[in-house]
Image 1 (tube, rainbow, N blue to C red):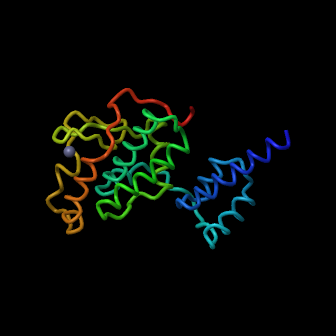
Image 2: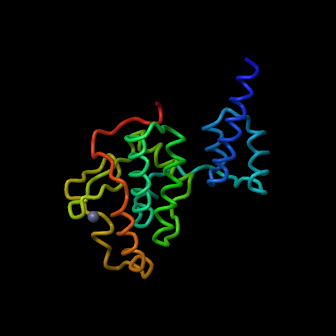
Image 3: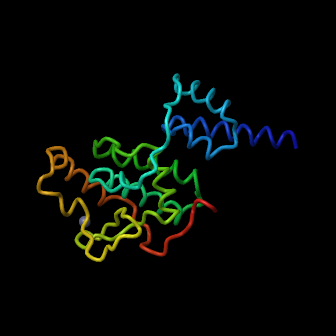
Length: 198
Ligand SMILES: [Zn+2]
């Protein structure tokens, strides 16, 4: 039994280190591993060479609704849902793989990542808690992150309808973002599945 617990401990350390490398905050490590806070702090400092940032994780779903974060979040969530539908990956493993693929999709189009790993993790938790959902754009048929409680009958996404007062950044990134979104994996539209608990 001792041998088994050593193996499982090693896996936990490996998972925690991997999460730190992806940029996860300490709260994510505490939630996803069974290691003590002291060990996680030590590990964080060792991997990153600095102490973890202090403060609470953002609790609001509103961040995911602003223009650029909404497009990035929708891309990430589609990749995540696609992985859960088509591979054995679940929970934190699916979240990490989806995050690496999200970064790859952006690199191909030379775009910066707007979504941090911690945000991506929160996004999946909000989605699983049914606080956030996706709605289909009437123009491009892409699925985008929306508040679950809102009405989405006539939903048009931020790329099909770039606000007229959009800044220079939005105009510059609209086209590359469109090609990223066109190339993203397409999960089934419905029904939603609970992946975190599996
Ligand atoms: Zn659209």
